[in-house]
Length: 136
Image (cartoon, rainbow, N blue to C red; front, side, top):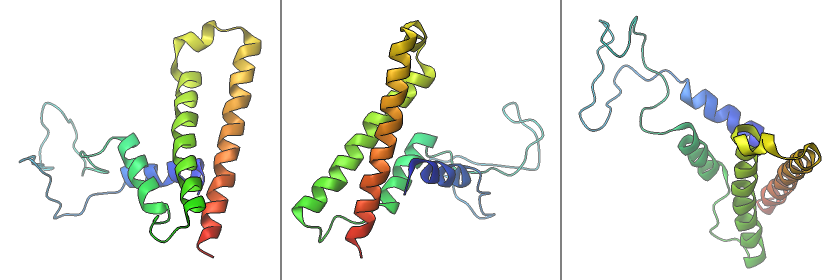
């Protein structure tokens, strides 16, 4: 499973129309029949108010990653390596895409960071393929 596939599933999850009988936690209520100060022209809620997109992403990573039970020690190290690599690659992606510091760096350094990030995600896909092969 690669980052693009997980991101697509997260997006689909967050736009999933909640069922008629959904029951939010902590006494939160929803009345879609009338506007209120927070939501004009109400439509039925989608996704969840319990998870952020990043939390949903982590949940999808959790449920789509093979269970570690029964893995050989060397296989578990590959799973752990992928989780750690994905965290680092995500942090670098965030830095490149959202940090004002990135824009102040020398253009050659910006390109090296972008290349590093691309290779990190490619490496992650290879680890994901190895993990998927563990189940075969």
